[in-house]
Length: 191
Ligand SMILES: C[S@@+](CC[C@H](N)C(=O)[O-])C[C@H]1O[C@@H](n2cnc3c(N)ncnc32)[C@H](O)[C@@H]1O
Image (cartoon, rainbow, N blue to C red; front, side, top):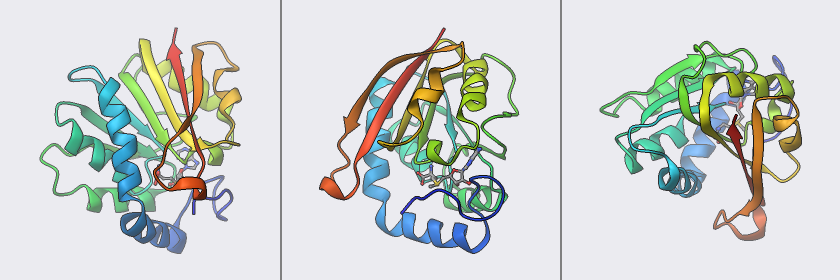
């Protein structure tokens, strides 16, 4: 379902495309977000600040909030429309995530702000993954981690090409959907 180039600005998914994506994701992908959230929840430190980069309709944030209510959650997306969907989808959470429209390559946060940055199916849309990597390194605290889940052909290598992030490893991620959706889990650490 997720695919590059949806018209509009860069890899942003807007308008009718965002409405279709929101509906399909809510209908089909919740079990997958629960798997990602369980993996994230297993390694996030107590009370950690977590950013979801390219959050789309925010379903991953919802799954993380349910698995780990102690985490402080933020999400950004290039598409205002997606942020609107995320606000609606997360409206019933007790602690609402901080949601903002922003480019991953130009983040509206001070440095050393997050313990963990996560991202699902967004990195392959990023126009400039190297610039994104510099920004993610800037907002992560030293020792903080980046966890990116995406198709195997996503530009994982570009995420550690600039100083600031060191690759820890890339492994297949079991989606529970068999061969339909082959996903890789990429991990890097902020220097
Ligand atoms: C396929 S969707 C994935 C959304 C969500 N992470 C999920 O798993 O359902 C890709 C998202 O990345 C966003 N995106 C694309 N380029 C971006 C960028 N440079 N900065 C932030 N978000 C971006 C799109 O607007 C879209 O919402």
